[in-house]
Length: 206
Length: 206
Image 1 (cartoon, chains in turn brown, purple):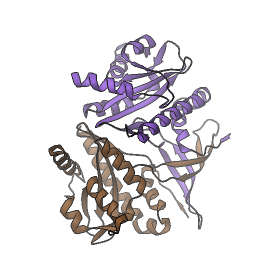
Image 2 (tube, one colour):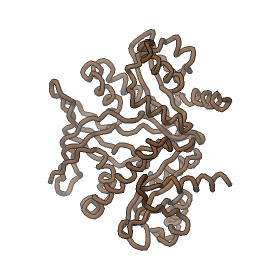
Image 3 (cartoon, each protein chain N blue to C red):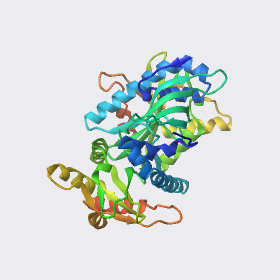
Image 4 (cartoon, each protein chain N blue to C red):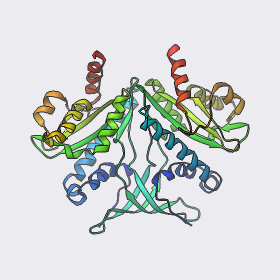
């Protein structure tokens, strides 16, 4: 089976799917994942063009094994593999604040499975929060096309709780109560910085 | 010609060299570039382990053209190309400040050629500075093994000046005067956050 994508970015979400149960995830979430990534990239492009924030998706980490150097043409990677990212996918700066987040999707209707995150991503966000960075999860319920921003502190609580006998998912009701619902708009498609502003204000009050 | 590197990171600097005059740069700076990248990664690992800062090198952007999906094994990238990064190589958070920089080397003894930077990298840093991020260039004079941190504002001045008839390089004397010399240490190998602290203090006074 071969697939051609001119745009390396498209493999970001794809890579994430592969890092899990690849066949399963790829067929189930592949396209949706890419489209969410596209929506976020478009939103970041809008924020950048307006001078509102500088936030980019990190390139997909690739382990390169073999490179050819044809004469008079660009080096060609002949063998490489997708690697699991050691951090989150998106980071940047907004009005002096370090912004760091990851985008996840679920086909579940009533809850968000914590298995969408990896321990190292949580560890990375905890380290960023200790440096006073603003970290969060952008969660999309694909069946209802609903998007939420869940602040990292809330994510951490439920992540850690699962290892103390708590549930392995966060109920949508909880996300709706503690998170920030983001309504799709024309431009940016996903105005998630509205939620980030609220998180910053809340965090300033402390 | 084939080269095998188990670690994708190694291709960061390598990719940067390729984006210029590849053959030339690769043979001239390849190894040194990788070693500087290794030194910075080690320093960032130290800062991370001590809870001092969370700064990572971004993966090398790759344009993927062909991927194979062998049964019962990981997806294999069969054809891909190095892409020119649209941002700088390193970013993260330090004590609430967004940190963004790129590392460059020169074999010149008395000056740093501005051609080591690309306009889009300068534009990216200017956008980050407008968001109150801390941006700078980490410059290594490889023949004397001297490393300097040059704040973005100074880099911007000389970058813009070259288009107004100014010189196409920054003299080492200027870098020594306005930049911050970083002495190699045991751990971290390159304690560049010492310079970042000074930049932050200076920038706070304004």
